[in-house]
Length: 314
Image 1: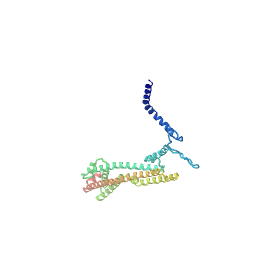
Image 2: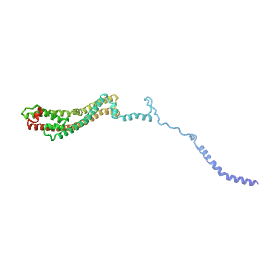
Image 3: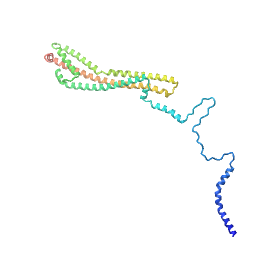
Image 4: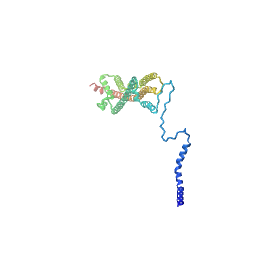
């Protein structure tokens, strides 16, 4: 019986020995590694390592001035004003930050440009209207044989042609009883010349302003530029720096005055030359109308004094 019990215990021990060895293996290895580690090395800590600071401030040597640490956020904040200044370099912001004299120059040049375009619109409407009316009047009296027929064809229309016909009739009435026809024609031609000169002065009204703006605006803008650059150099001397960020805004404001001056002068010169051509064309029509009135007067004179001159004297 005891043998049976012994055999049973032995068999159970043989069966349980591998599992016990597997369970004790890892713990024994850890203990063995701990026993073999030198005592100078500290045990491995399972705690997470402490976070290192983003920047380290260097220790200044004795006697040197202290330097404040600059981190990334402060550097970014320092760059933001420069970026905002660069974005504010628009024509309007440069005008607002310019010197008072440069502002006055810019305002004057802007007003000159406004005057130029106002004259352009007004003269374009005026020249197109009077040319159309004069061409229509000349077409109406193309078949007239005398001054009286021409006045009847025109009716109560006002214009340079009506003035020429009235001058011819008035000269014929004042010269009634004079036998010399050449004197009548000469006096009538003198009246026609006066009417033509008055019409030329009227039609050229405003063109002198265009010529003045076109010739003086660049120099006025240059004056504003010189004044602005002078103030920029004074600011550079006070700031004691030649940094482009300090120099550029003042020079840009000064150059803006020249740009406005050219913007006012170039259209004024172009518009003046355009109106000079249109005025020349219109004055040629006026000369043609003067010739028509002179021919009608000459026909009446050739028909004899018993015709239009007698009726004019009445």
